[in-house]
Image 1 (tube, helix red, strand yellow):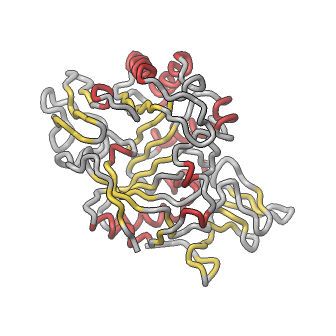
Image 2: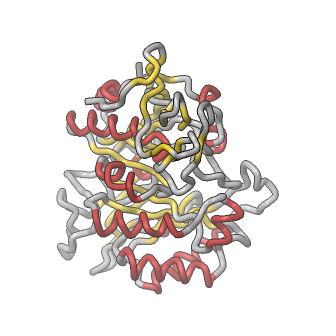
Length: 366
Protein backbone atom coordinates (compact mmCIF):
# COMPACT_ATOMS: atom_id res chain seq x y z
CA UNK A 1 0.00 0.00 0.00
CA UNK A 2 1.37 3.44 -0.96
CA UNK A 3 2.44 5.60 1.97
CA UNK A 4 3.55 8.75 0.15
CA UNK A 5 1.66 11.95 0.92
CA UNK A 6 0.77 14.39 -1.85
CA UNK A 7 1.92 17.97 -1.44
CA UNK A 8 0.07 19.40 -4.44
CA UNK A 9 -3.49 18.03 -4.76
CA UNK A 10 -3.44 18.94 -8.43
CA UNK A 11 -0.22 17.02 -9.15
CA UNK A 12 0.01 13.42 -7.88
CA UNK A 13 3.64 13.20 -8.98
CA UNK A 14 4.76 15.56 -6.19
CA UNK A 15 4.83 13.92 -2.77
CA UNK A 16 6.32 14.74 0.61
CA UNK A 17 9.94 13.71 0.75
CA UNK A 18 11.52 12.05 3.74
CA UNK A 19 14.96 12.26 5.35
CA UNK A 20 15.39 16.02 5.70
CA UNK A 21 15.44 18.71 8.35
CA UNK A 22 15.00 22.46 8.53
CA UNK A 23 18.00 24.77 9.00
CA UNK A 24 18.09 27.92 11.08
CA UNK A 25 18.58 30.13 8.01
CA UNK A 26 15.27 29.09 6.43
CA UNK A 27 16.69 26.45 4.12
CA UNK A 28 15.98 22.71 4.33
CA UNK A 29 18.70 20.08 4.19
CA UNK A 30 18.17 16.81 2.35
CA UNK A 31 19.51 13.94 4.46
CA UNK A 32 18.94 11.16 1.94
CA UNK A 33 22.45 11.02 0.49
CA UNK A 34 25.92 12.30 1.40
CA UNK A 35 25.48 15.43 -0.74
CA UNK A 36 23.14 16.82 1.92
CA UNK A 37 21.89 19.55 -0.42
CA UNK A 38 20.79 22.70 1.39
CA UNK A 39 17.91 24.28 -0.47
CA UNK A 40 15.92 27.47 -0.33
CA UNK A 41 12.25 27.44 -1.24
CA UNK A 42 11.91 26.52 -4.91
CA UNK A 43 15.43 25.14 -5.28
CA UNK A 44 16.14 21.60 -6.47
CA UNK A 45 18.98 19.39 -5.31
CA UNK A 46 21.86 17.99 -7.33
CA UNK A 47 19.64 15.05 -8.35
CA UNK A 48 17.08 17.52 -9.77
CA UNK A 49 14.04 15.55 -8.55
CA UNK A 50 14.14 16.45 -4.84
CA UNK A 51 13.28 20.04 -4.05
CA UNK A 52 12.27 22.50 -1.36
CA UNK A 53 8.62 23.17 -1.93
CA UNK A 54 7.01 25.41 0.66
CA UNK A 55 9.89 24.82 3.09
CA UNK A 56 9.52 21.07 3.09
CA UNK A 57 11.28 18.40 1.07
CA UNK A 58 9.41 17.08 -1.94
CA UNK A 59 10.01 14.28 -4.43
CA UNK A 60 8.80 15.62 -7.76
CA UNK A 61 8.87 12.40 -9.81
CA UNK A 62 6.61 10.03 -7.87
CA UNK A 63 4.64 7.73 -10.15
CA UNK A 64 6.47 8.83 -13.28
CA UNK A 65 8.98 6.76 -15.20
CA UNK A 66 11.25 6.92 -18.21
CA UNK A 67 9.82 3.62 -19.46
CA UNK A 68 9.17 0.01 -18.49
CA UNK A 69 10.91 -3.01 -20.03
CA UNK A 70 11.06 -6.70 -19.26
CA UNK A 71 14.71 -7.76 -19.26
CA UNK A 72 16.76 -10.82 -18.32
CA UNK A 73 17.79 -10.68 -14.66
CA UNK A 74 21.39 -11.26 -15.79
CA UNK A 75 21.34 -7.80 -17.39
CA UNK A 76 21.17 -6.02 -14.02
CA UNK A 77 23.70 -7.79 -13.67
CA UNK A 78 22.64 -10.48 -11.20
CA UNK A 79 24.02 -13.96 -11.92
CA UNK A 80 23.06 -15.67 -8.67
CA UNK A 81 19.47 -14.45 -8.31
CA UNK A 82 16.70 -16.46 -9.99
CA UNK A 83 18.87 -17.32 -13.04
CA UNK A 84 17.21 -17.11 -16.42
CA UNK A 85 14.17 -15.27 -15.07
CA UNK A 86 12.70 -12.04 -16.40
CA UNK A 87 12.47 -8.79 -14.46
CA UNK A 88 10.31 -5.72 -15.06
CA UNK A 89 12.76 -2.81 -15.04
CA UNK A 90 12.10 0.90 -14.75
CA UNK A 91 13.70 4.15 -13.67
CA UNK A 92 12.79 7.80 -13.38
CA UNK A 93 15.16 10.70 -14.13
CA UNK A 94 18.10 12.38 -12.45
CA UNK A 95 20.95 11.04 -10.33
CA UNK A 96 22.87 11.96 -7.18
CA UNK A 97 26.23 11.29 -8.84
CA UNK A 98 27.73 13.22 -11.73
CA UNK A 99 29.69 10.50 -13.54
CA UNK A 100 31.37 11.82 -16.67
CA UNK A 101 31.28 8.32 -18.17
CA UNK A 102 27.60 7.63 -17.46
CA UNK A 103 26.25 5.09 -19.94
CA UNK A 104 22.62 5.96 -19.15
CA UNK A 105 23.25 9.69 -19.27
CA UNK A 106 20.14 10.46 -21.33
CA UNK A 107 18.08 9.32 -18.32
CA UNK A 108 20.29 10.10 -15.34
CA UNK A 109 21.14 13.60 -16.55
CA UNK A 110 17.65 14.42 -17.80
CA UNK A 111 15.56 17.16 -16.31
CA UNK A 112 12.42 15.84 -14.69
CA UNK A 113 10.03 16.46 -17.58
CA UNK A 114 12.45 15.52 -20.36
CA UNK A 115 12.15 11.74 -20.05
CA UNK A 116 9.29 11.00 -17.68
CA UNK A 117 6.71 10.01 -20.26
CA UNK A 118 5.14 7.01 -18.46
CA UNK A 119 2.93 7.16 -15.38
CA UNK A 120 2.24 4.26 -13.06
CA UNK A 121 1.09 3.74 -9.50
CA UNK A 122 3.06 1.16 -7.49
CA UNK A 123 0.16 -1.31 -7.60
CA UNK A 124 -0.04 -1.12 -11.39
CA UNK A 125 3.67 -1.79 -11.74
CA UNK A 126 3.34 -4.97 -9.70
CA UNK A 127 0.30 -6.06 -11.71
CA UNK A 128 2.10 -5.37 -14.99
CA UNK A 129 5.07 -7.46 -13.85
CA UNK A 130 2.80 -10.39 -13.07
CA UNK A 131 1.01 -9.96 -16.39
CA UNK A 132 4.34 -10.06 -18.24
CA UNK A 133 5.47 -13.19 -16.41
CA UNK A 134 8.30 -11.45 -14.55
CA UNK A 135 9.42 -12.83 -11.20
CA UNK A 136 10.80 -9.53 -9.92
CA UNK A 137 10.78 -5.77 -10.40
CA UNK A 138 14.02 -3.78 -10.72
CA UNK A 139 14.61 -0.13 -9.87
CA UNK A 140 17.33 0.77 -12.36
CA UNK A 141 18.42 2.93 -15.35
CA UNK A 142 18.96 5.87 -12.97
CA UNK A 143 19.81 5.52 -9.30
CA UNK A 144 16.74 4.51 -7.26
CA UNK A 145 18.13 6.14 -4.12
CA UNK A 146 16.84 9.48 -5.39
CA UNK A 147 13.29 8.14 -5.81
CA UNK A 148 13.37 6.09 -2.63
CA UNK A 149 9.78 6.88 -1.59
CA UNK A 150 8.46 5.59 -4.93
CA UNK A 151 10.72 2.53 -4.82
CA UNK A 152 9.69 1.63 -1.27
CA UNK A 153 5.98 1.88 -2.08
CA UNK A 154 6.45 -0.14 -5.26
CA UNK A 155 8.40 -2.80 -3.37
CA UNK A 156 5.56 -3.12 -0.85
CA UNK A 157 3.06 -3.61 -3.68
CA UNK A 158 5.33 -6.22 -5.26
CA UNK A 159 5.82 -8.18 -2.05
CA UNK A 160 2.06 -8.23 -1.44
CA UNK A 161 1.73 -10.03 -4.79
CA UNK A 162 4.62 -12.45 -4.33
CA UNK A 163 7.16 -10.60 -6.50
CA UNK A 164 10.74 -9.94 -5.50
CA UNK A 165 12.49 -6.57 -5.82
CA UNK A 166 15.91 -5.54 -7.09
CA UNK A 167 17.90 -2.28 -7.05
CA UNK A 168 20.79 -1.31 -9.28
CA UNK A 169 22.48 1.50 -7.39
CA UNK A 170 25.74 3.29 -6.70
CA UNK A 171 25.08 2.92 -2.98
CA UNK A 172 25.46 6.65 -2.35
CA UNK A 173 23.05 6.92 0.57
CA UNK A 174 23.18 8.18 4.16
CA UNK A 175 22.87 5.80 7.14
CA UNK A 176 19.51 7.24 8.27
CA UNK A 177 17.89 6.21 4.96
CA UNK A 178 19.76 2.95 4.36
CA UNK A 179 17.69 0.65 6.54
CA UNK A 180 14.35 1.53 4.97
CA UNK A 181 15.61 1.61 1.40
CA UNK A 182 17.49 -1.70 1.48
CA UNK A 183 14.88 -3.17 3.79
CA UNK A 184 12.43 -3.25 0.87
CA UNK A 185 14.81 -5.17 -1.42
CA UNK A 186 15.53 -8.82 -2.11
CA UNK A 187 18.67 -8.22 -4.18
CA UNK A 188 20.97 -5.37 -5.15
CA UNK A 189 23.82 -4.80 -7.52
CA UNK A 190 25.96 -1.98 -6.13
CA UNK A 191 28.24 -0.14 -8.51
CA UNK A 192 31.70 0.24 -6.96
CA UNK A 193 32.98 2.64 -9.57
CA UNK A 194 36.62 2.53 -8.56
CA UNK A 195 38.80 2.00 -5.53
CA UNK A 196 40.28 5.46 -5.35
CA UNK A 197 39.09 8.71 -3.83
CA UNK A 198 40.54 10.72 -6.74
CA UNK A 199 38.40 8.85 -9.26
CA UNK A 200 35.21 9.44 -7.27
CA UNK A 201 36.05 13.11 -6.75
CA UNK A 202 37.07 14.03 -10.30
CA UNK A 203 34.90 11.73 -12.41
CA UNK A 204 31.79 11.25 -10.22
CA UNK A 205 31.74 14.40 -8.04
CA UNK A 206 31.29 12.12 -5.04
CA UNK A 207 33.21 10.26 -2.34
CA UNK A 208 34.30 6.64 -2.08
CA UNK A 209 33.88 6.25 1.70
CA UNK A 210 30.05 6.28 1.84
CA UNK A 211 29.88 3.63 -0.88
CA UNK A 212 32.21 1.31 1.02
CA UNK A 213 30.12 1.88 4.16
CA UNK A 214 26.97 0.94 2.25
CA UNK A 215 28.58 -2.22 0.88
CA UNK A 216 29.69 -3.34 4.33
CA UNK A 217 26.31 -2.51 5.87
CA UNK A 218 24.26 -4.33 3.23
CA UNK A 219 26.47 -7.41 3.40
CA UNK A 220 26.50 -7.72 7.18
CA UNK A 221 23.23 -6.16 8.34
CA UNK A 222 20.63 -7.32 5.79
CA UNK A 223 19.42 -10.42 3.99
CA UNK A 224 19.65 -8.64 0.62
CA UNK A 225 21.46 -10.74 -1.97
CA UNK A 226 24.45 -8.60 -3.02
CA UNK A 227 26.50 -8.47 -6.20
CA UNK A 228 29.05 -5.79 -7.13
CA UNK A 229 29.95 -4.22 -10.49
CA UNK A 230 33.03 -2.21 -11.47
CA UNK A 231 33.31 -0.61 -14.90
CA UNK A 232 37.00 -0.70 -15.85
CA UNK A 233 38.03 2.47 -17.71
CA UNK A 234 41.44 2.46 -19.42
CA UNK A 235 43.93 4.65 -17.59
CA UNK A 236 41.49 5.60 -14.85
CA UNK A 237 40.74 2.62 -12.59
CA UNK A 238 42.10 -0.44 -14.40
CA UNK A 239 45.66 -0.67 -13.03
CA UNK A 240 46.80 -3.91 -11.45
CA UNK A 241 47.39 -2.12 -8.16
CA UNK A 242 43.88 -0.67 -8.00
CA UNK A 243 42.26 -3.96 -8.98
CA UNK A 244 44.32 -5.69 -6.27
CA UNK A 245 43.09 -3.21 -3.65
CA UNK A 246 39.49 -3.54 -4.78
CA UNK A 247 39.65 -7.33 -4.61
CA UNK A 248 41.34 -7.25 -1.23
CA UNK A 249 38.47 -5.12 0.09
CA UNK A 250 35.92 -7.51 -1.41
CA UNK A 251 37.49 -10.60 0.19
CA UNK A 252 38.17 -9.03 3.60
CA UNK A 253 35.07 -6.88 4.04
CA UNK A 254 32.36 -8.60 2.00
CA UNK A 255 33.51 -12.20 1.76
CA UNK A 256 34.66 -14.35 -1.16
CA UNK A 257 31.14 -15.50 -2.13
CA UNK A 258 29.92 -12.03 -3.20
CA UNK A 259 30.03 -11.98 -7.03
CA UNK A 260 32.11 -9.30 -8.74
CA UNK A 261 31.24 -8.14 -12.28
CA UNK A 262 34.08 -6.47 -14.20
CA UNK A 263 32.57 -4.60 -17.14
CA UNK A 264 34.03 -3.03 -20.26
CA UNK A 265 33.76 0.73 -20.79
CA UNK A 266 32.65 2.22 -24.09
CA UNK A 267 33.05 5.95 -24.85
CA UNK A 268 29.99 7.89 -23.77
CA UNK A 269 28.68 11.19 -22.38
CA UNK A 270 31.69 13.38 -21.46
CA UNK A 271 34.38 10.74 -22.03
CA UNK A 272 34.01 10.23 -25.75
CA UNK A 273 37.77 10.40 -26.37
CA UNK A 274 38.61 7.51 -24.05
CA UNK A 275 39.31 4.15 -25.69
CA UNK A 276 37.15 1.10 -25.10
CA UNK A 277 38.30 -1.40 -22.51
CA UNK A 278 40.26 -4.19 -24.23
CA UNK A 279 38.98 -7.70 -23.48
CA UNK A 280 42.48 -8.55 -22.27
CA UNK A 281 42.12 -6.02 -19.45
CA UNK A 282 38.97 -7.73 -18.21
CA UNK A 283 40.60 -11.14 -18.43
CA UNK A 284 43.66 -9.94 -16.52
CA UNK A 285 41.53 -8.30 -13.82
CA UNK A 286 39.37 -11.41 -13.53
CA UNK A 287 42.47 -13.57 -13.04
CA UNK A 288 43.66 -11.16 -10.32
CA UNK A 289 40.33 -11.37 -8.53
CA UNK A 290 40.34 -15.17 -8.61
CA UNK A 291 43.88 -15.22 -7.23
CA UNK A 292 42.70 -13.04 -4.35
CA UNK A 293 40.17 -15.71 -3.48
CA UNK A 294 36.94 -14.34 -4.92
CA UNK A 295 34.85 -17.31 -5.99
CA UNK A 296 32.59 -15.74 -8.60
CA UNK A 297 34.09 -13.17 -10.98
CA UNK A 298 32.38 -12.23 -14.23
CA UNK A 299 33.23 -10.16 -17.28
CA UNK A 300 30.61 -7.89 -18.80
CA UNK A 301 29.92 -5.87 -21.97
CA UNK A 302 32.05 -8.30 -23.99
CA UNK A 303 31.40 -11.71 -25.53
CA UNK A 304 33.18 -14.08 -23.15
CA UNK A 305 31.34 -17.32 -22.36
CA UNK A 306 34.10 -18.56 -20.04
CA UNK A 307 34.15 -15.30 -18.10
CA UNK A 308 30.37 -15.10 -17.84
CA UNK A 309 29.65 -18.67 -16.74
CA UNK A 310 29.31 -19.81 -13.14
CA UNK A 311 31.57 -22.53 -11.69
CA UNK A 312 31.24 -24.73 -8.62
CA UNK A 313 33.73 -23.53 -5.97
CA UNK A 314 34.13 -27.11 -4.75
CA UNK A 315 34.41 -29.32 -7.86
CA UNK A 316 34.94 -26.67 -10.61
CA UNK A 317 32.01 -27.95 -12.68
CA UNK A 318 30.39 -25.37 -14.96
CA UNK A 319 27.11 -24.86 -13.14
CA UNK A 320 25.54 -22.21 -15.37
CA UNK A 321 26.73 -21.68 -18.93
CA UNK A 322 26.07 -18.18 -20.28
CA UNK A 323 26.31 -16.76 -23.76
CA UNK A 324 25.57 -13.10 -23.15
CA UNK A 325 22.22 -13.38 -21.33
CA UNK A 326 21.21 -16.77 -22.72
CA UNK A 327 21.69 -19.76 -20.43
CA UNK A 328 23.10 -23.04 -21.70
CA UNK A 329 23.84 -26.06 -19.53
CA UNK A 330 22.38 -25.71 -16.03
CA UNK A 331 23.71 -28.05 -13.36
CA UNK A 332 21.93 -26.87 -10.21
CA UNK A 333 19.00 -28.49 -8.47
CA UNK A 334 15.93 -26.43 -7.55
CA UNK A 335 17.55 -25.28 -4.29
CA UNK A 336 20.82 -24.18 -5.92
CA UNK A 337 23.04 -27.18 -5.16
CA UNK A 338 25.64 -28.50 -7.61
CA UNK A 339 24.23 -31.67 -9.15
CA UNK A 340 27.73 -33.13 -9.23
CA UNK A 341 29.05 -32.69 -5.70
CA UNK A 342 26.09 -31.22 -3.80
CA UNK A 343 27.80 -27.91 -2.95
CA UNK A 344 25.30 -25.13 -2.13
CA UNK A 345 25.97 -22.23 -4.49
CA UNK A 346 25.67 -18.81 -2.83
CA UNK A 347 22.66 -16.91 -4.12
CA UNK A 348 18.87 -17.01 -4.41
CA UNK A 349 17.56 -20.06 -6.27
CA UNK A 350 13.92 -21.08 -6.34
CA UNK A 351 13.06 -23.84 -8.78
CA UNK A 352 14.40 -24.54 -12.25
CA UNK A 353 16.20 -21.94 -14.32
CA UNK A 354 14.06 -19.61 -16.38
CA UNK A 355 14.22 -19.42 -20.15
CA UNK A 356 13.82 -15.71 -20.82
CA UNK A 357 17.12 -15.44 -22.69
CA UNK A 358 18.19 -12.16 -24.32
CA UNK A 359 14.74 -10.75 -25.03
CA UNK A 360 13.84 -7.16 -24.18
CA UNK A 361 10.17 -6.32 -24.14
CA UNK A 362 8.75 -2.82 -23.84
CA UNK A 363 5.73 -2.77 -21.52
CA UNK A 364 3.03 -0.13 -21.25
CA UNK A 365 1.99 0.46 -17.64
CA UNK A 366 -0.94 2.75 -16.92
